[in-house]
Length: 202
Image (cartoon, rainbow, N blue to C red; front, side, top):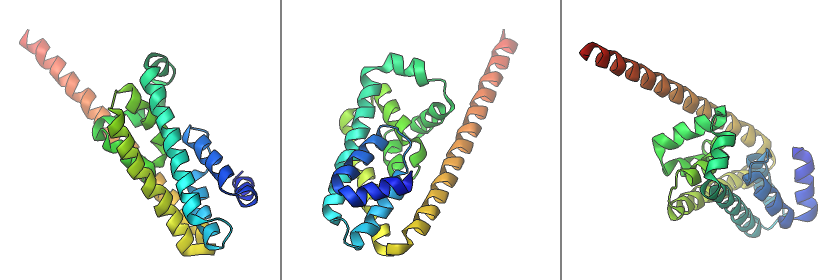
């Protein structure tokens, strides 16, 4: 899949890059981080103009993120009924409840595995769109130009860079899941203690 997509980008240039990034931002499981790093390397090799590729990728991913937000905002009931009990949703919701709007920023480039659920949760939680957009734009700018810049900097070694960054992102996501589990367990224990205390008082 990755090789096919990268071949299409080389053959058809920035328009197909924008389409791929947009589709991935909507939640289709595509290796977007790898693609962004590879595009940076391709720009260094002269296959793509780096400024055009960066701008198109940024507009595409922000547009996709905003559509995810709109889905959560305008279809809150159906979305919660459909996804509200899924494990990935619960992880993203716990992260959002802890970090608020900052979770949008952090999941753009650091913990990308829960970025799409966070987009939708931002809408269902009625986070003001202006706040969502600013966090999103800033985080995606770091993702596009930071990761793409690494690909440009390391050139032919971009695959090793991608592997390293994916490992780091997976590790951080694991920490988030662990932290959420601990928080959930402590919350349940606290509620149980409060219930026992109320029974004793009665």
